[in-house]
Length: 143
Image (cartoon, rainbow, N blue to C red; front, side, top):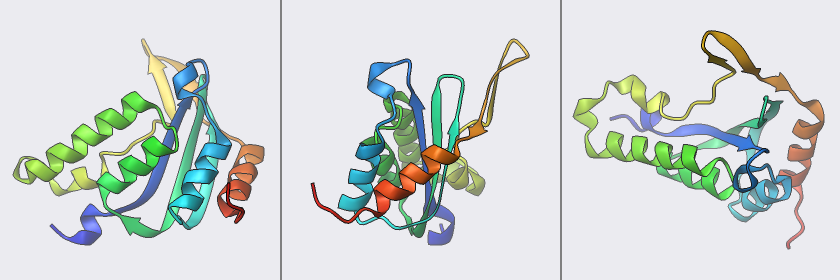
């Protein structure tokens, strides 16, 4: 399998502010980004019905296991990251069972959510949060 196909430059974070263990912590995201010396080409934050989605594009690609680790460390929904870890493990352990496009499909956020055919959540761009995230990942002070 080609490294270009397997490795990813996407860090996708999912936060549910109605659940204490899944809430957004901007300072945590910044701390992890700085400690791991991550550099980003793009960061965009979106408000959802229950919380936030954050899309981060790295300057360098990382292995999918590393992406899952980064997402979990940054506080993304732990259940989502557990499923992501299982997906990546299965892709690594049984590559013959999956078509190549699955390497690009394991890490997803849904822009819209429907229940019984009714739209219940839709991402809305959050400019203020996007700016705040850029500030915290670029900060060079040490805690």
